[in-house]
Image 1: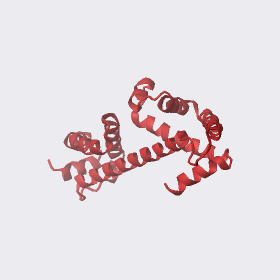
Image 2: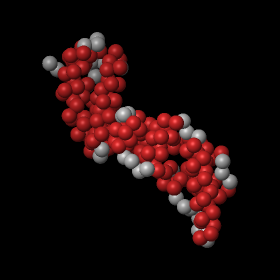
Image 3: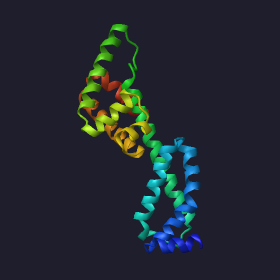
Image 4: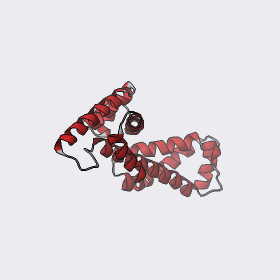
Length: 193
């Protein structure tokens, strides 16, 4: 049976057509995604998310359009979104945990380090409990996303979402609770982002 015919059946809610397309494309999409994400668990979650999206949006599938191209376009967009999230997340963490962007004396550095740590702790304490738990396990206890997901019985994608949202909240908190010593590094971060 052709992809076009299966896509037509899928658009009418045919579960067996969905299963056939899943079987045909899962391995190819997995290998394609793994090349970019470099993490098997995250890749598996991404593929699951792609097929969930495919099923949920089945009514809008145009069987006249090349199904393979359609599926790989969805996959490419998911990969780009994931990479963008990770890039932003790592940049923010590096900024928050860095000592200072300016040259200062050791005493100044100690004071600023202490201020950063206190602000960072206060920002973490403002997070909702579930989000805070995931963030602490990741950034304080240095657990991998996979380990956190297994510990809390959630998906790696959910862990990623919690961390991403935590970073947004922390950035917001720091931007409203800082003096000039902290505004300059934050300004430079956003300027060169």
